[in-house]
Each structure stands twice: as C-alpha cells, then as structure tokens.
Amino acid sequence: MPIRFLTAGESHGPELNIILEGVPAGLELIPEDINIDLSRRQGGYGRGGRMKIEKDQVHFTGGVRHGKTLGGPVSVKIFNNDFKNWDIAMSPIFQDLNNPEIKEKIDSKYISRVRPGHADLPGAIKYGHEDIRNVLERSSARETTGRVVAGAICKRLLKHFDIKVLSYVLRIGSVSIDIKTLGNDYGNLFSKAEMSPVRCPDVEISEQMKKAIDAARSQGDTLGGLIQVVAVGIPVGLGSYSQWDKRLNGRIAGSLVSVHTVKSVEIGLGKLVSELYGSHVHDQIYVDENWSNDRLRYKRKTNNSGGIEGGMSNGQPIVCTVATKPIPTLIKPLDSVDIKSKSNTQAHFERSDICVVPAAGVVLESMLAYVLADAFLEKFGTDNINDVSDNYKNYLKKCYQR
Image (cartoon, rainbow, N blue to C red; front, top):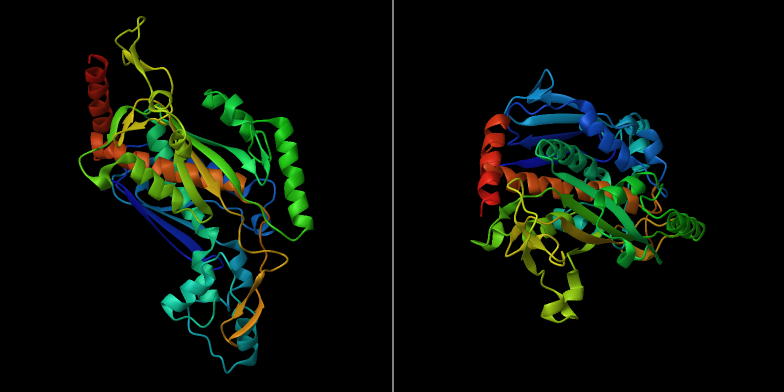
C-alpha cells in the first residue's frame, strides 16, 4: 500500500494520535486543512454534549516543516479536553486502589452492563475484560476523529490534482429527499448541504429531518440514515482487475463499511441493478463530437456504475450510497445483561448523541479520500509531489489521445 494510516488513543484518554505514512514530499499542508473537517465532524443537528467540550485542533509532531510535507510519516496529535475529568479513571499510570478516593473515581466509571449493537459484549469476551470501559473507550466513535485527520490530508493531496470528495445526507429515519430529483451537480448539492444543520441539500426536507430528530430525542431513542459520498475529477484507471484485493470497488466498500455505524454500501445503482434489465443498467458509451485534446473523447449516457467498471475507475464520478444504523446508546436503554452479576438488566447509558448521520458523512468522505489517495499514489508514484504531478500529466495526455 503506498499510503496507510494508524490511529491510537481512547475516547476519554489524554490524547489521540494519528500517523499517516506515504504522503509525498513537497505537499503544502497547514493545520487549517485538517481543522476545518474536524469542525465539520463535530457539527450537525442531533449531536450530544461531548461536542461542546472538545474543540479538536491538530498539532503536527512529525513529517511537516514550514507548511510542507517532508516525505516521512506525518504524525498528528489531538488533545482530549475532557481528560481532566477522567485523569484518574483513564490514567495510563498504575493507580493505588487502596486509596479510597482513587478507588471511588475508578469505580464510578466501571461498566458491566453491555449495550446491544455496540462492541461491548463481543469485545469483553474476545479480550477478556471485566470492565466494559476497556472496550468502550477504544471502540467509541471518538476514534473517527483520527480517520478525519488522515482523510483530510488525503483530501489535500487529491485537491492538488483537482479531485474532490463530497457528501450530503439523503435520509434520516423515515424522512427522505427524493433521490430521483437530485441530478448530478454534485458540487451544488454539497454546497447546499453545508448550509443545512443536517447536511441535506433540500431546505424543506432538512426541517423535517430536524423534527424527526427532536421526536427521537423526546422518546429517548436514536436515528440512522442514508448518505451519498461522491468523488469528482477521478481519472480512468485507478484500481485494477488483476487481483481481487486490488479492485477499487472492493477497497472502497471495505473502507466505508469499517466506519462505526455503517451497515451497507452501494456503488452506483447499488441493489437496484438486481431489478432491471442489463439494457437499463450498463452505461452506454459514445464519441464526443465536440471533443478536444484536453479530455476523454468517450462519454457515457448515464453513470449507473457509479464510476467503477471491472474494479477500476472509468472517469465518471464515483458515487456511493451508505446506510448508517441508529447509534446503540439510548436514553431509554434496551434490555441487556450484566456480565458481572450474570443477570438480566438494562443497557448502560452514557452521554450520547441522538443522530450522527450528518457527521458520519464527513467521516465517510475521509475514508473514500484515503482509498482514492492510496490508489492514486499506487498509479503515479509517491516520493515527491512534483514527480507525481509530472507522471499524472503525462498519463492524462496519453488517455486523451486514445
């Protein structure tokens, strides 16, 4: 893999750490390139109290000098402001449980009641934990902060080549925008979505979504939704048909479904292809009569494939539709078990969101950007941004002459 990232840190630990390896030297990169997406991730109607505590800002600790990448791993840290309230309970250092004050602080954060739909029970069994806190802290969606950092750097790389990754919300709960009327002006849809508190490009539907979130909150419940993630400006030929694990659609689907709340990923028409004739599914090709040598001469009548054919990008926008489940921490907890007493009870509740769908779009952008940046550097090289640019320009010239 030309580019990869690792994250570390717990939800209420001292800090989050991110290392992104494989970024070419010479790429202009400043904290604001990342902080803007961190702020977007923390926004959205339906978020909980934690977003008011954390004001995530990146601190470069390696790989960047004077606003440009050096070619080595880019390392970033983000401090958890809430750690001051958890300094004993989440301390990495050994604590004396014979001290009653220390023991009381640790015991107050102890969890043995698991939440259906979360990592709690399988994680506790897999890793042998008695205190579910040991599972919750790392499996928490706070981890997506690190993904957004890595993804924002990948977006900055893609932007250098006029590639953009965008998202907007199609559905929250039972309230949905009419997908058939959306069209394919993705930049405009994104701009409208960024003005909406639920990141939906339709003003009236946005208000209905807010009401649905309010209703869920009043019932002590949560809501999921549907998000469209799009990449525009993608060249032909990212990915490969040569091996199963090099296929771009597989890499994208695996990356997106790894996000905490995601339950399904569709590319292009998605499951609708199972209902239609082939003549209504495959994107017919024609020669552009107004072709000039600064673009492909071949065009498509549709983009039902979502920009991917045979495991490779085909020059069309890559369009993914992603379904996210309601988050599993409910104000009115579900029936569950206590793994300490081995008894039936209700699930644990901790400060939580009602709906994370708007924020999830930002995380999904990050993961799509990561896969595309990886595939891009796989094709065009990794050492220096100028060399990558030269390789890319040369490739485009060849494509345009085909």
